[in-house]
Image 1 (spheres, rainbow, N blue to C red):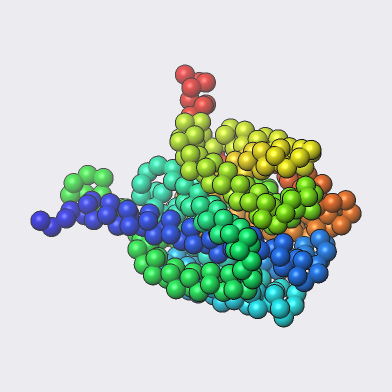
Image 2: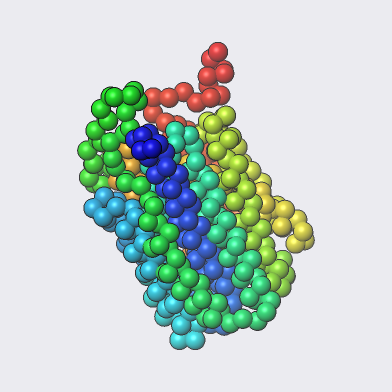
Length: 412
């Protein structure tokens, strides 16, 4: 029996969903493999908090080079080829970082520039693919893709905690992770679906709807809503990035835990974020984007306050849970909001990601400089300030021309 076009469309979509999960999990895994080893690099290279912040700035430099180009690259080559190529580059970058453990901070910084470049372009490409399959499914799934990213980070953090406990040197650990990602990802993304294509006919025998023409990236930079979504994503990216870069350092330096316990705190933060992203789509479908995101931002503020002001590591761990849950939905929902119109998805996702990644440009040195002036733990309070701003910007994520669920109930 020859499958119908609708059956083939559904099968391709399911394969695309699996491949997209693989891309998100893999990028989370390789990112957290590095992030979990930051305390050991800091100690081995003799870096202060401010110096470490400047080294971490290298990731943002690489990302901000690639992100403005990513929309045009994805439009030209497609998300599948972009992700596969940049995954190999990502593995090479992590290998350079690993060598920098003995060669010195400048080599680590060089590796981080390459790492940021590959991660930034990979991020845009896989979010474009995620938006495509989300539209094919007709329901919210983007937060679950980002839950896949978080799942990858949790797995990497737990593996890193084991490596630290066993005394495995950071270069050995990172080189193994780099080889795994460079070999696996190009194979895993072969089932990505086309980024733009005719939609299937809604009635039997009806012709497919032609795909809308693509829009240049420069046009998206002139759209107020797109830029405001970028600002919204920036606030959540800062909250998430600070947790990634500084949670374990703050646990170790601020709460006096061991390296292994500090790394476990980082894993708890990532685990909470993963759960928030996995169960988030149900809440989004029920309550809508903007109101739920405001509640999440408040949750993150409470978590940061508990993490910083809690008098013992147990309360700090509880704070990381609220912090992780509170930041879970901001970035993925921002990407979905940027991709609301298929014809402009690649361009707008590129712009929003570029604006959002300014958090990774300013975040690490800001927290590091505040850490030199006060303490790393105290500097984490800056996340609370960002989340307050997010509360006021969240309404921009509403889909144009729609009424959110809570508004429907109120007006009914």
